[in-house]
Length: 74
Image (cartoon, rainbow, N blue to C red; front, side, top):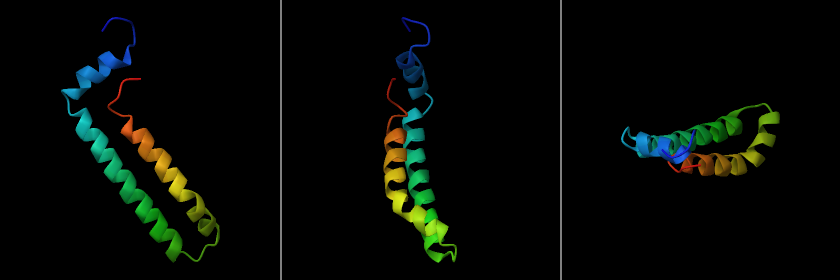
């Protein structure tokens, strides 16, 4: 590490601890959670969660992009 709080130094250390596996696990968990949310909203009698179904795809896309950044520096 060359400067204080350098994320690339932290990432380099964490790669030895399975950081890349953590990224894949996070992505898998997000896919499962959004599938569960979509199924639940479709089955629910509550009409408010039907509105949420409209934004779930964008929320999922954003969350997966963020998960994809787990093992990248900065």
